[in-house]
Structures are given as C-alpha cells and as structure tokens.
Image (cartoon, rainbow, N blue to C red):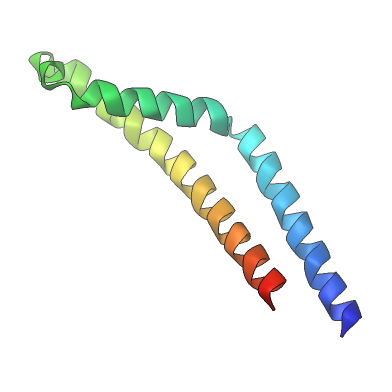
Amino acid sequence: EAEQLNSISYKLDDLAQRAAELRGIFDYDHKRERLTLLDKELEDPKIWDDPQHAQDLGREKKALEDVVLVLEAVQGSLDDGRELFEMG
C-alpha cells in the first residue's frame, strides 16, 4: 500500500510540474494580467462609443479566457486531487 501511495504522490507531483510548465509556455501570468485589465476596461460604458474597438477587445478577452480559464481549471483540479490524496 505504501508503494501505491508513493506512486500516486509522485504522479501528482509530476502533473503539478507539467501544469507549471504549461503556465510558462502559454504565458499565463501575462495573459491573466491582461484579462484583468480588459475586464476593467470593458466595464466602462464609454467603451461602446467605439463599437469596433469594443468588439476587438471582446475578441481579445475571449481568446485570453480560452487559455487562462483552462489553465486555472487544470490547476484547480490538481489542487483538489492533492487535497483529497492528503486527506485519505
């Protein structure tokens, strides 16, 4: 049983390392920061004074979300898995 637990722990550590590498490859920190700025910018009603610019920002936001939200979901699942493993 101890061998199985060590194997699971190793796999969780390996997955966490791979997730960290993916965050680096996909420039997660920069994309998360840009997404936060875009959210604030898009909250301003005056943004719609220039509909084309607003649409461009909306498209950029969607592209950033496609990366950021997936990476956050992966990290959240890994964190949950680690927590469950440590509880067991």
